[in-house]
Image (cartoon, rainbow, N blue to C red; front, side, top):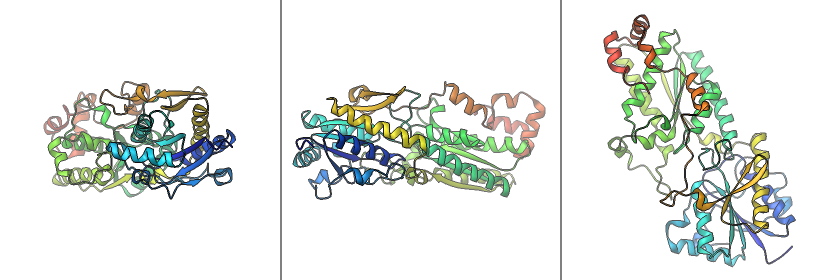
Length: 414
């Protein structure tokens, strides 16, 4: 082992299935390449305070069988070292004190940003590589390349929604489910599409910068009306968490006391959009004399520490191994990806917006994948208002006259 080369591993952001597989592969490959390997617990939290007491050396026996387990053996945290020059200097000083020459960060866009700042603040002395992790699938990889953890989260989420669909059928009720996904609707769409949910709504389908809360409720209400007209009195609506950030500013102002994380983001999981939708839609039907049972549910934390499915376990081994090979070959300042079976680094500067933030990969609503998902949803569409007899059935299901139905919904289909 070359004692002059020390590699540290840091996990930041929320958990995602496959973290331990990345750690395992990176540790094994780094030791085989002659590195001393250190595991830094709880992201950048303690390094920002100059505390290195919790850092421990990792050996192959410590990680050889963790690749099929969920969670993170190093823990994780959202503490943001980029918020000031002083905290970043403390991080670099702490890493220097540990004789760290190479750094592997595992996380989402905020951790990627922190990793790029370590390169800059250390004057390039510490070589870094980032492994893209997020169940949101929103990092700027090529369209066909998922972020690790997404496939497992979608798989587990789809199973949960399938169970809710059966409960809904058995009890003649509706569920409104909000799935994690701060800025992109990949997870909600993937879960809804795979499970065959009645309706999925994501922020990307709205061209406007803001979405009135009433419009979200109109779409849900319209789907329930259409389903009732078809003779069914149950269903599941899946909504992307990111819809919260597209609420009208005046409506969002009511949420300003909600806690924010270290990077300034509203903790969306604390905003119960599903409950707000439930109360409003249930009230609308009640006012028209229709008794409807809606149940609100949030899905997110249940997905993040699941054991990785085979796809993510294998994929993450490639990523962990590839990250170390990239550093070993002299690389630095990039995010690793595996494309067509080959390691392809993506430079940090190629991931940035003009404002210096990590670019977000959103759902492309022009894609065949989205169009197929939309075809299998149940919504009020413009063609629903072309047949007078069908409009009468919809009006009866809504307990409205046909003119009021048209006035309410014909111009509001998304």
